[in-house]
Amino acid sequence: MTMRVSLTAVLVAAAAAISGPDARGADAVPQGPGLAARFPFDRGIKSHPSVLLHETFEDGIGRISSRWTQVKNKDGKVLSVSGEKPPASGGRQSLQMHSVKGRDTGGHLWQCFKPGVDTMYGRFYVKFSKDHPYVHHFVKIGAWRGASRWPAGEAGYRHDGSKSFQTGIEPGSGWGKNDPPGGWFLYTYWCEMRTYDPNKRVYYGNAFAPQKPCQIPRDRWQCVEFMVKANDAPKSDGEQAFWVDGRLIGRWAPGTPTGSWKSDKYRIGGGEPFKGYKWRTTNDLKINTFWLLYYQEAVWRGSTQFKKKPNTSETEGTVWFDDVVVATEYIGPIVAQKAAQKKPSGGIIAPPKIEKKTKADPKKEAELRAKLVAVIRDKAASEKPAIYIDFAGRATRAKLVSADDDGVKVSMRGMAMPLAWEKIKSHRLYGMASKLTDDHKLLADYCEAAGLEEEAEKERLLVK
Image 1 (cartoon, helix red, strand yellow):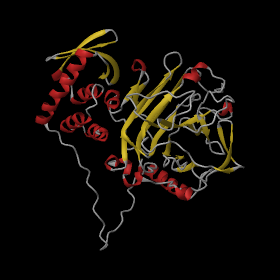
Image 2 (cartoon, rainbow, N blue to C red; image 1 turned 45 degrees about the vertical axis):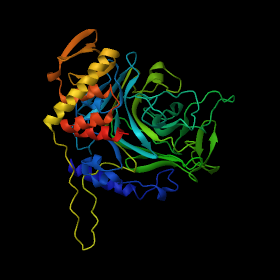
Image 3 (cartoon, rainbow, N blue to C red; image 1 turned 90 degrees about the vertical axis):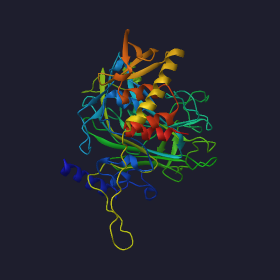
């Protein structure tokens, strides 16, 4: 495995010297090795101050789901863990999303960050099944003022620059010109977007694609990264870009590339330098959501943009995700060896930084556990809300029916199920409580006392 990863790292480094098809101005943005080069196999990368999220899917679906703000997993049948993993990964498994026509439209994991940032990079590894069809919508980065605990729809309207903007890295069909699952491009909504509608009543995402299609292979892992940099309102100096396997494929920023608009698509070629994005009209609007989305609605509906192709399934599709990192700086592909350390004055190599580990505190955990139990009891008495619980290694939707001093009762698939408090493990209790309260300090303190290191770090980021 090390030899394979090392070869990949060499190829990635070589790619850093080669501009992508639309990489004019590439000297202003990085490519090749990035932040990940300082953390072999991404181990310890979550300790870096620029990292907002690090997800390796090395747990059951219930525990994975508890780390995200909102999850879509219809009847518990779309999301699962799999032994498939990227050759470069240091883990044992990945997240599988399996969509079936007539049963579901796909699934997602969605994360909201508070208060948000001005620049966000999202990197993930992805593989499509060998007979995968086209894809309707895919992974997105967004800015939503007053974001709730679930993602918002956007089709059909132009965004208000004081409230929201969003862009996605998507496989585009090119109306049949690209082979399934499609070619990578950016699909974008913002306050100055264009429309094909002469009456300017209907708006759908604007397309930003490289001049030469970036065809996505099937049955092979790719490292995909994309970035959104907000403008300094009211200027139009925002930008976005994306990379595949560490190579810059496209960047749209003030002065680059040269092209022109055709309806709601920006075409690279003859024309004028791109002016940049006016993503927002106030700097109070921050980039605050990352949406690991797999959506197949129009594909299963038979929309004409998704033409039938040979050796392609018309009824189901599977995609695998792994090694997700969200940060405020360029991340780059996973590497096997740590980048060379800089020597301080005196010529002595600085010792490596030791990652701080969270130690469980049973006494404090018991104290904070009582507070979370009280939260659950109060919600059960007043609202009877829907929650997700880890059941047989799968995140399952359930209704919180009642709770008392002995335990909690949930209704799941028409069956009433009692759970005694002492039988509910720490990560399950956290998963239940995190859906019922916005007291992120309490949640963070509990996770720290229980030794749930990643969950504690996530909740600390959400403390206002």
